[in-house]
Length: 246
Image (cartoon, rainbow, N blue to C red; front, side):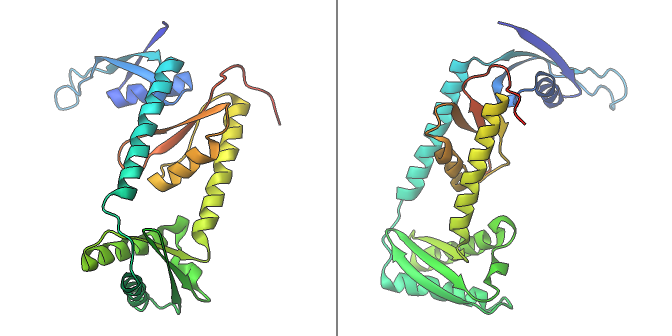
């Protein structure tokens, strides 16, 4: 198995140097630290660079890691969906609707709220001439409102009910946009025969990317990173020479 050695001011710098030189994502590298490095005395005398030894992970190792990660994510999603969720009643819907209306009253935007009830979910749709202002960049304002309403409803009713807030059909448009992005990035990965990586995404958005590409036999997807916001790595199964397509 071919090995490489890289140096850097810190171990992290050395790993990034390796990824850049090998033109591969960090997730595809197996790293052993030879020397962790030291800043020396007051950062002036006796400092040592960090040194690492790198080997490329095999397809089997990458596949196994991806399957384990996806199993964890799917398990977490299923647990979150099933854990303590209750069917909303009419009174719950009315309370959630009024909660959002009270929050919107604090914002100088004229809007109304339409509420519907589904299995373990309440959907609140904001309607108005300027309701699009409540979406925010990449839906962040809408997500913040949704977070607040869910917290208030759960605490006040002592129930775990999923409340989804939408405006101008943003949620559906977002799903379509993410699906198209996933397909476009998948085509790029196949064309260049190199993995491509998304920006950090929340669990819901990552799931949409995985679903968009799950039936493509030439690709596999894996989540990488720590915490709530992770990236999706889209990997071509055939890593031959890149094709030259304009």
